[in-house]
Image 1 (tube, rainbow, N blue to C red):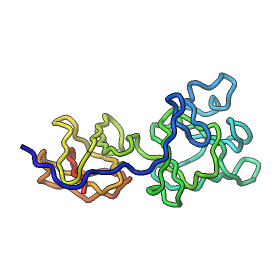
Image 2 (spheres, one colour):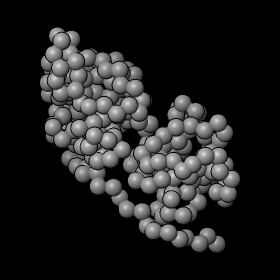
Image 3 (cartoon, one colour):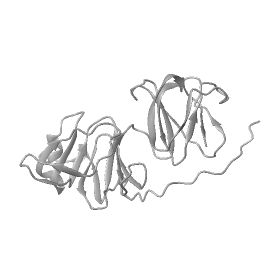
Image 4 (cartoon, one colour):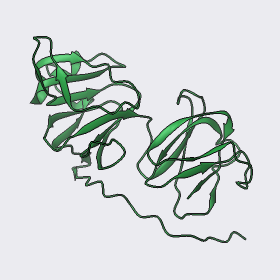
Length: 217
């Protein structure tokens, strides 16, 4: 019998809005596949992160080198030499794009653009953005390989101070703690043998040995 103790985890204030099942990023986030054939998203190659200087994928276009995990302001230097805010974008990488309204990419998160989606109009609320591993909000994800690739397992922790184990097959070498709390990973099913930790909220990385079970602190 497992004794559950600790406080119940709350949900971060993300300010997510939906319209017809589509997540909105002031004022609209649209699936790339739904764009007309002549629209700007087709300019963006598979595997790339692309930005435009104007809404609706118009104006100056650029493939952006946005390293995984780097926190960036939503400004860009365009081909004509000018610098201005990004006003629309497409994410065709295998990572998700996280939008924050604070200077810190780990605070003030209000929207996530999954791989293969874009935003046709980015408002001034966006302060910073970063690419992060594909993992739902309030989940802890474990990935098969050290580079955050391969099979992904998601764990849904509901309380603190409880060992969560996705099962014998749900073990990997890398992780994303996409919760508002610190997390500790273990290499035993009873959360007794610890390889490393604690891991900060909204952080990701890898270990030299397989991990699976996790406990939220």
